Amino acid sequence: MSKTKYVMSGGLAFSENKDMEKLRKLSLKGWHVRDFKFMGYTLEKGESADYIYSVDYRTVNEEDAEEYFDFFTSSGWTHVTSQGNIHLFRALPGTKPIYSDRETVVEKHDNLGSSLKWFTISIVTIILLLCLGTFISTGALQTTITYIAVILSVIAIPATWTVLTIYKNKWKAEGRIGLVRFMKSLPALFLILGFTIILFITDDSGSIVGILTSMLIGAVALPLAIWCFMSLYYKWKA
Amino acid sequence: MKTTEQLTDSMFNIMAALTKPRHGYAIMSLVEERTHGVITIGPASMYTIIKKLLKQEWIYLYDGSEPRRKTYLLTEKGKEVLEADVKLRKLMIQLAETGLREAEE
Image 1 (cartoon, each protein chain N blue to C red):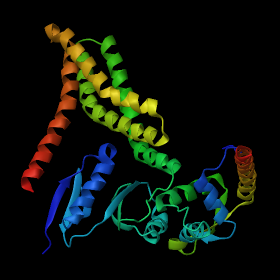
Image 2: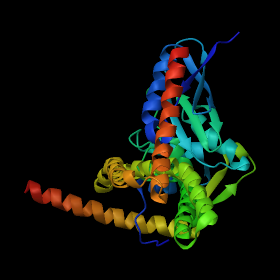
Image 3: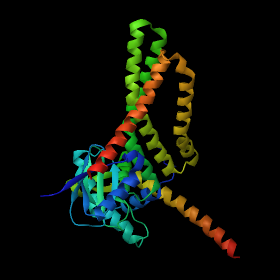
Image 4: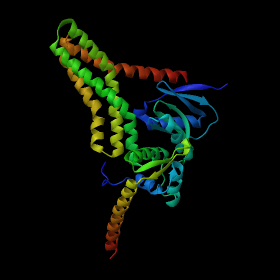
């Protein structure tokens, strides 16, 4: 009988290196990744071994899959598992990295961000149109539009956050320091903006802006709360 | 895409290995062997660049009968691009060597 357990991922867009380092440490303790699982990895208990891990993002057609995985096998990397366009590999320490130049690393971040980017751009556009709609409508229609916009924002905020992080990683790989610094300061800017809005509209809590703001704050707080809960839960279970 | 834009080092190395039909693994070993292990190409970089060169039509699928080991070869256009880049790189080396000689005098 094999023993398995689950560990959380920090989110590959946010903490790829940390995740890979964590998987290495777990392998040293005899816990090896078997699969991707919802927001994390399934590990299986085995012999302790020193493995390094790497992840690649790529849509691989069926007819190209054999060739793609053969490149890795030939270079000493064992394919562990794939989920959608995310592929996890492991190797013995000292194996040459799967990316050997900066130009292709930049494209790796592009691969990760490409599908999410269009999803996010379209959803943000819809929200903006809906917001415009609230200005030209009244009564029940206005309320409905507002609620749709708020619900979509709950999805759009984490998505935008992820896309921005992926682009930050990409710019970092390209060495565009200025853009990276700007991105790092964004969360702080948003916080300041959020607090300012709260301060100005607390006495006017019935307004659309009030509802929108509190829902936006909820959209940030909710995933954060889920994430905290999940990590605490799995820590406690382990 | 402009052909005047300089090739990245990895593209240059892979194209240099594709003057004869070779599959991915053969390209990686050849580059490593001929540069005495100084230059290596990672599998993810390799795959990215093969796809890119195919799209540019600088290489073509020479033999796809064995899906695990497809072989590729430079196209005429690819050969021209590589030759132009070799010329450019030679100039760059001359520039640096002349500079270094001056420094020694």
